[in-house]
Length: 228
Ligand code: OGA
Ligand code: MN
Image 1 (spheres, rainbow, N blue to C red):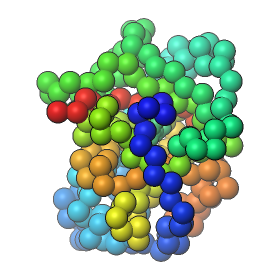
Image 2: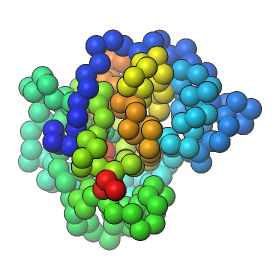
Image 3: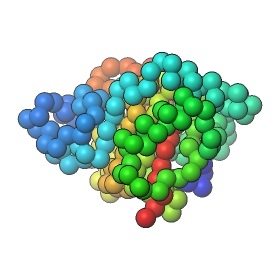
Image 4: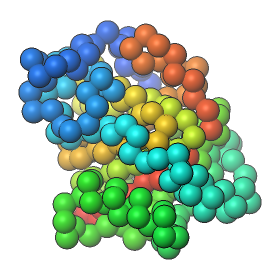
């Protein structure tokens, strides 16, 4: 995956998460159809402006569907070792694979992901990317390569809750934290994908709205479209 990423390692931490909670419609503006309480940010304006470009959909897949995905993925993943040693990698403590052909139950889940995340007729990156993060693994701030992927990134989270942080590349005091519950789907589009770095916090830093969100081993199943 190193090819797909253009890494931008942040030296400073984002400010302490004191941002407004995205509440009822009052300050929300054009909210996306996702779960609002799962997104926090540095200001109500940012939440409003990015509202339609960031979505988290809780319980997007059932326990049975999660088990079907894991059943297909685990045998291949188990043969690989977690990578910890590349200090310059965007991802620490991971193993990964790509998959083009899926069994029936999984294919149905993926076509549901595609139909909610991508406009009809847009060209998708053929293979689905599967990233298995060890319990101690994490993803550093980066922006996915604009050469290889288009405007939209959609990911299912298996096995663990986690926190995804978006930080505006040219104004680091502008940030959003997304709580990604196990079995949820997140979607990043346009500015959220191009102008903000995204990262998955390590277990020790995994706190959302003042609450610890223990990070276990986490597998993500990520669909992307092709650049125009
Ligand atoms: C990536 C990435 C996020 C995730 O692989 O580029 O940002 O949900 N993954 O695993
Ligand atoms: Mn990424």
